[in-house]
Each structure stands twice: as C-alpha cells, then as structure tokens.
Amino acid sequence: MFVDRVLVKVEAGTGGSGQTSFRREKFAPMGGPDGGDGGRGGDVIVRGDRNLTTLLDYTYRDAWKAERGQHGEGSNRTGRSGEDIVLPVPPGTVVRDAETQEFLGEVMEDGHTILVAKGGRGGKGNSFFVTPTHQSPREWQPGEEGTARTLELELKLIADIGLVGQPNAGKSTLLSVISAARPKIADYPFTTLSPNLGVVPLSDHRSFVVADIPGIIEGASEGKGLGLRFLRHIERTRMLAFMIPIDAEDWQAELDQLRHEISSYSTELAAKPFCVVFTKLDLLGEHYVPDIEAPGAFGKYAISAAGRMGLDVVLDAWWRELLAMRVEAEKPARDAQFLP
Image (cartoon, rainbow, N blue to C red):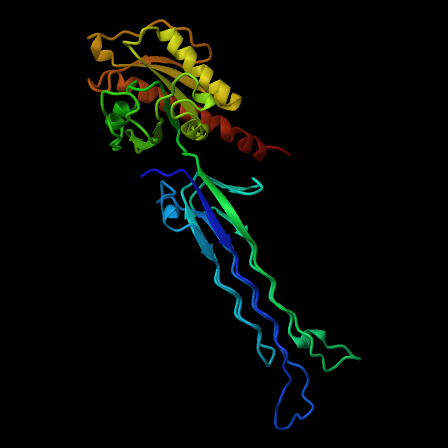
C-alpha cells in the first residue's frame, strides 16, 4: 500500500533531575556537596532511508517517545542521557508541525537527518550551587521536559522524469516496459491509483528514475479526480513527459489541458523542461509524429510501449536532457574554482 501522508505524535525525553548529596567518608567528616547533574533527555530525529518508498509503517504506530534522562547521583556523577529515537522516512519527505504548519525540514537523501523534538536539559545537582558564602547548598533543579508535538509527514516522490497524462494514456505500460516496475495495467480509467517509480537501465551503467503519476483530468489542480493528492509528486521531478495517446480526439486540446492543470497547480512546475510523447503508435502501424504546438518543448516523439517502437529514441533524448541539466547545475561550482 502506498501511503504518502501521515500524522505522528512525538515526544522528546525529559531531562533527569539533579541530586542533593554530601560526601560521607571516614576521614572527611566535613565533606562538601557532591550531588551530580541529571542526564539529558533523548531527542526525536527524522532520518532519510533509501530502502523505504512509503510512510506505511506510521499508520501502525503513530506515537513515539524518546527515553528520559537518568537522575544525578552522589560523588558528582551525572545521570545517563536518554537514548534518541530515530524515525526512518523515504527521501523526499517534508516534515511540518501539524498544529502550526511550521516547516521543520525536508529529507532529500539517504542519511539526511532533521531534529524534530529536542530532549529536555538535565537539572543541576547541589554541587553546582556552591559559593564561598553558601558552602552547603541543598538546592537542586528538576529536569526540563522534552519537546512534544504532532508531526505531519508528507512524501513527495523524487524522480528524474515524471510521466504526465490523462487516464489510460499508456504511462503504466511504458514504465513496465522500460523498467523492472510492475504497475497495475488495465483497459479502464484510473487503473493507477498511486504513483509508481521505476529505474530505467541504459548501456554503460547509465540509469535514471521515472515516475508514473496517476491520470490527470480537467480540474485536477482544484482537487477533482485524484487531484492534488498526486499532483504534488510531480514537483520533485527534474522534467516532465506529457503523454498523448495517438487515438485521442484532439491532440492539441489534450496537451493544452494537461499543461493548464500543471501551471494552475504550480508555476515553478510549469517551468520545468518538458517533451511531448505520443503513445500507442502500434494503432497506426507506421511511425508518425503528429504536428502539434508545444512551445519550449525539447522534443516531440512517438512510441509504442507494447510494440517496442521508438523507445530507444525517447530514452536517449531523456538521458541527453538530464545530462545537460546536470552539467548546467554543476557550472557555478566549476566557475568558482577559477575565481581569484
């Protein structure tokens, strides 16, 4: 089951209390205060784990509490700090405070961590309060409480290419052919109810990730159909492939409608590089790329996933575009190396 949004209650550990203690030794009858400090409470940390692809685990357990710190002891012994709790999430997870909607961070890669609830500080023991005029203090401090909050975890898939199209445009079929992913395929609309990721292998150890997004219909940017729930997954893609079935009634109107829904949802998303891919070419029995207006597109292609037609051309085009984007992104860093 694909789960991309959950609410999780977390509570960091309370700090241990300080100790009131005085030395009691055979040859030190006037031993001074030696109460130790309390230990720090454990933190709650969110960490990226590339082995995860969903937030499903947090539907089974939605409350997490870190260990509290131990109290201080005599002989100036500080209490043991509480163990931290680490919540593993898939890369691409956005973390917010559910009550205030405060943005706490975004896990973008494996091992990336975000501190979401800080453990309480341990209290001071009576040895901390010693002064020249107050040499036998009995004061001590209780430990501070750890932060408690409800987190909203929202997963946005990270992929190089997002397949965008209306229901039954052939997105799932294409993904199943070019990768090892096995999305559900059927001849009725909205077969795909959750996004699917697939790694596309090329020669020379090259590869990239493609995301199959559930069908977008008119009004999706306003929540119609599967709507906003899955449009946000396209935000993480580097570029878009608008997929138009060759048997569509009006190719231009279908492309315009898809681009309108994307731009209505996010102008930043609409500015990403894109291409147009006509699918189901096997219905024509010949290679034909329809003439369509797509200003700014880096290419127009026609394929048949079922008939394995035109796939090499479009995959090579995607790779070249991704490579060019990578070179462009690295250019500022290279230029900085030669600055005086």
